[in-house]
Amino acid sequence: MEDELEAMRAHFPLSFGKTSNVSPPTESIHSATRRADAGGSSDSKSNSGFPSLSNSWIQSVRRPKRKPNSSGGAKSEDDVSVGPPPPRTQEDEGVMVGPPRDGNDSDDDDMIGPPPPPRTADVDSDEDDVDDEEEENRYKIPLSNEIQLKGHTKIVSCLAVDNAGARVLSGSYDYTVRMYDFQGMNSRLQSFRQIEPSEGHQVRSLSWSPTSGQFLCVTGSAQAKIYDRDGLSLGEFMKGDMYIRDLKNTKGHICGLTFGEWHPKNKQTILTSSEDGSLRIWDVNNFLSQTQVIKPKLARPGRIPVTTCAWDREGKRIAGGIGDGSIQIWSLKPGWGSRPDVYVGKAHTDDITSVKFSSDGRILLSRSFDGSLKVWDLRQMKEALKAFDGLPNYYPQTNVAFSPDEQIILTGTSVEKDSTIGGLLCFYDRTKLEIVQKVGISPTCSVVQCAWHPRLNQIFATSGDKSQGGTHILYDPTQSERGACVCVARAPRKKSVDDYQPEPVIHNPHALPLFRDAPSRKRQREKTLKDPLKAHKPELPMTGPGHGGRVGTTGSGLLTQYLLKQGGMIKETWMEEDPREAILKYADVAVKDPKFIAPAYSQTQPETIFAKSDDEEEEGDAKK
Image 1 (cartoon, one colour):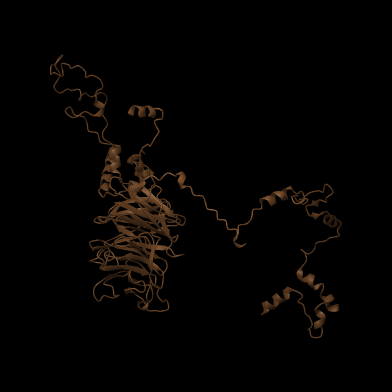
Image 2: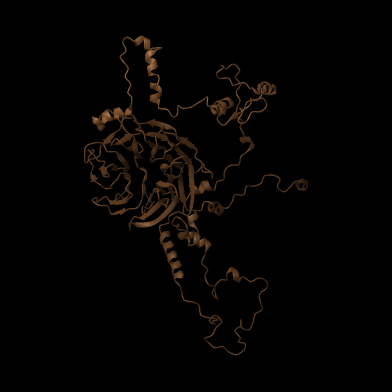
């Protein structure tokens, strides 16, 4: 039986039957997403527009260090012999042949030609570059590869990644929120859902709940919304009465929201800030009213917007950035009110766009429109520990974040109008309070929000401008886990014949005339084209001398007009005549022989007096 099957199989080609899909190697997949400025040569720092990245592991793969072969060590691949071994000589057995040699001479010590030149500065610079790379690699920043989640038509203003690192939310100025799932996404990097929380309002903040089962969406409207994990709306918070002056008596915000964040421990509590000058704490189970209203301390009475807010790691303190440049902190304790426990007036010279607590509760970071990033010690808030300047910021959602071990501070920069430097992602050492690295994200788009996920070990950065927007994900295949590494290696499914679905045609002959499809007039058009009278093309007007019995035209009009003008019978003097004089020519005729309306008012109409010249009026005005 087996012989018969083999004989039958011999009649078919070798490719007959089910073949296994051979997936490309992982190295080739990640090489396609490698950043251009993560190259291997040390000259990339000077040639590229952005600073080079830390890539010691790439250098170790591309240029492995070769140890010199010792007499007793293992042989390298170049030393592997081919063919039978050579015959042994007397020298191998220790027998000396020929005259004895001097003890100081050896084959390795014989110098042929001039001595080698001394060490130059280039060699020293190469070693310095290697030392710099080793210093950068000490922070283990995953920057070698990059992918981009596209889809938005304007700048991406907010970002949220769930705790497990499976789903990513991105909100934009195009009024939409896009949801990405790493587990269900292939290399095309397309979102699986798009929602528009509030029509005509920009999306300003997104925040996941502690359990990642719901997320908060804050837009430019006065009402925040809650969605479940799949993007289905669960509720909308109440809007307050704008005619009530005291904000504590309103049941919600009365102006557009600026920021919102979920409580880090309690999945029932959220915090929002608004342009009406208040912060509010809400209970997710009650959308009709807030549980607490916080009014910041102001130097002058009035309403100053609260531009940003944040919880600390334990959810026991709230920090708020006020529009007058001050930072205020409230401690949630029994009997607490709107009076802040910590007040730092004029912390920045412009609006504050982001504040961030450290997990140990000792450091507070603040980012502002004044182009600075400040590090504060919560035990001594009179003066900032360090202020990093030269960080342009033109978007009110620009944030600041920590690395997973909180040893690195990162923030993005905006693109200036006449600058050649694009949007950068800046890294700072928290301990030394100095710059670590600046990474170019986009040459033309600003970087707004950034995040470093602790489980994935991947860096997220949102960017864009007035016409496009996306989320950049920086990762390292040797350090990062899941996330971008999973979806990049998953090829899109090939299209099948079964995927074709023609558009359904609905026939409804009894529909009203308004809803019926217009009947085809193809036959009528074909019949009309065959009729010589209906299909006759009208004659074009004459543009030159006449022919075929038709009177031609000249440059100045018809032939008759041309002849009359040449004979002097038509004189066009109206362009050279004064309008006032042309009317006064008929003044005497209108008085002597009135027609139309004038005879009806001949007994009651006063005598008409016409001004003879404009010069008299001008002289009269000058005398006055």
